[in-house]
Image (cartoon, rainbow, N blue to C red; front, top):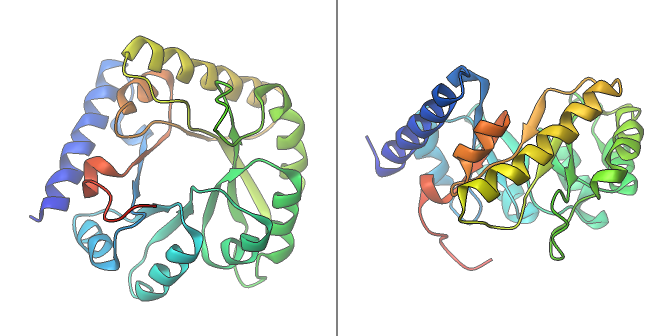
Length: 230
């Protein structure tokens, strides 16, 4: 098995252990391999080890990579910021977009989604801890935006995504993830049909799983340090 394959197995073991500790099934948490800045061959290695879902932050880089990997049955998730001039690329090439935080962006994604493709699966990005450098809608505005996004014809609203400020203390990690879980539950109670809570990365996936994450986004623990600066 390749190094990437070994790393994937280690991450899957971490997820399974975290699930067992909270009485959850290991298959209740999906793994998204964050392949930004890594080339197609790294993705091929991960696919050979059984990984099919990949997350990309840089849209133009991702589109080029997707084109080189069309022979593989992969699922592509946009997890980076989406500017107005990039919505057409996201709509045409990705299966998921996790970072919808404005109605304007959602409307453009819906309008530009090609008819030959199914609905674009989307998450509302929420700035759950109010980080000054983080994108995302404030929690208090999440319900209104989610209702508007859910009404768009070429999008399928799946849930919410968070990227809290880094914290090394497990209790701090858990507390912020629990806030996201509470918001997710509030949106569901308000009548939205959601199934995805996208939170948790290499450093905090255990706390995220404990809080109820259904999808963790892991890059460094799979692929190693970034191949080049962003």
